[in-house]
Image (cartoon, rainbow, N blue to C red):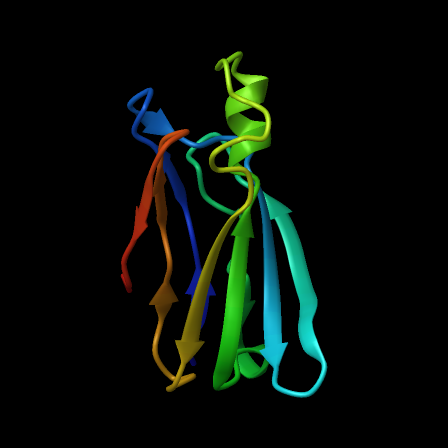
Amino acid sequence: MGKLSTHVLDTAHGRPGAGVKVELYAVYDDSGPTLLRSAVTNSDGRCDKPLLEGAMLQPGRYELVFGAGDYFAALGVELPEPRFLDRITIAFGIADPGQNYHVPLVMTPWSYSTYRGS
């Protein structure tokens, strides 16, 4: 059985993104996003357990929303108002629930990237 996981890397400071709020939504065509899980990253920038696994991991469209603006503000980074990047949303699909889906976020206050890991 597969699983969904994430982690956050703060490349502006060269360290894991500890204390970042992460929300996972399922995106249904008829009713919009539905919150499935909320977590906060640990000292290694990871969630303590998979966001989805086993029977909970289903084919479909999902969104991960990261509280990047609050994270950088808590570090004392001077940010404009409104923040350039506040809540970073990564929209992705799961086609095969038997596989592992790792969706990391690499971020600064001004940029971000992601990729599919395993």
